[in-house]
Length: 197
Image 1: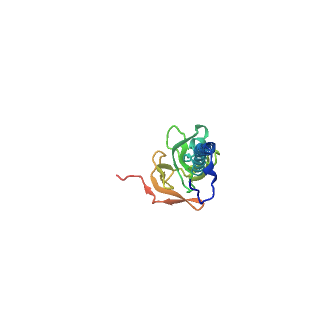
Image 2 (image 1 turned 60 degrees about the horizontal axis):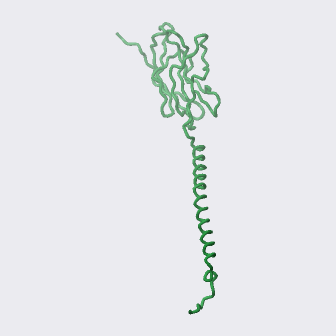
């Protein structure tokens, strides 16, 4: 047998028991790594998903329910009725508001309407934060929409106290948009609904 010029290495004289111990240790390390890796990956994914859900929310916030609000409209015993409502993010904060057209729940006739902006923050009860049309103006509201942060409606009114309340003879196209810290109204020209013979 030829001797090596290199120094003796420990494993060259190893017995089968040494190789068995080394193989067992390596198998244990590989098995432990295989068992631990999926748990760590799952925990990381869960933490990431939780962060995303917390940051962006798992579902968009619900718009305030106008049926849960008492509006500043005195209707006596007949009560209030929400004639129309629509959600929209009016102030650009990412949370929806609800705009509601409300009038007294009269059995007949055309009671005047109010247009109100309702908000709800952090689980609190919904509340009115702005009045766009005051019922004291004695106006009816039609063609009501909320789109792209703008509230639009056609306002129906009366030229005099002699005009029957069933039949408004004036109309105005109006829209409101949040600017700075208030809703700013833009109005089209007032017109007449009366038709000539």
